[in-house]
Image (cartoon, rainbow, N blue to C red; front, side, top):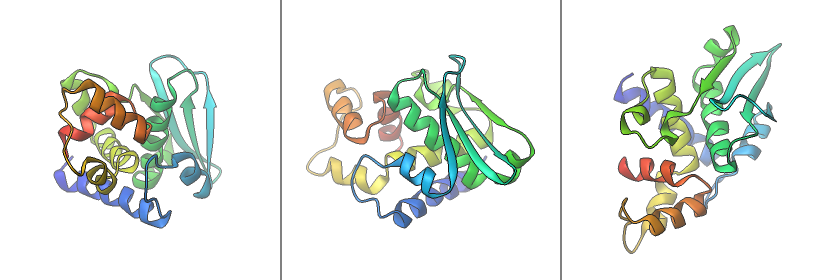
Length: 173
């Protein structure tokens, strides 16, 4: 996984945001997925399963763990959309199952991820749900300290993501 791959992932997310005319948070990830003719299904899965992406008989499918918090479900859906956008050939061959989206964990080491496809999908999902332009606009007039719990939580609510995901995005902004 190179920096170029992460840039490519972020640019793919930015292209989708432009395509759908997204100009304010929260990003309508469900609408985007459905408009791309991908079936989005919510089902109770094992706790450590966040989501899955696959293509069956030419139809793209995203499965999201219905037992997870709605903000985590949004990130999982965006992450799985990344696999459809960036890794379609690989998910045609087999169901791609994500056990725990690493970006949502507080452990910095686990937030880095280890598999290139997962790092790329996290970069895409992060940019899709917390677009750089919209984050910059939200921060106009003063940034938010990552240690400022109330500030981070307020931003996270605005973008409908978890505070952990917002901290992760802010640390790489």
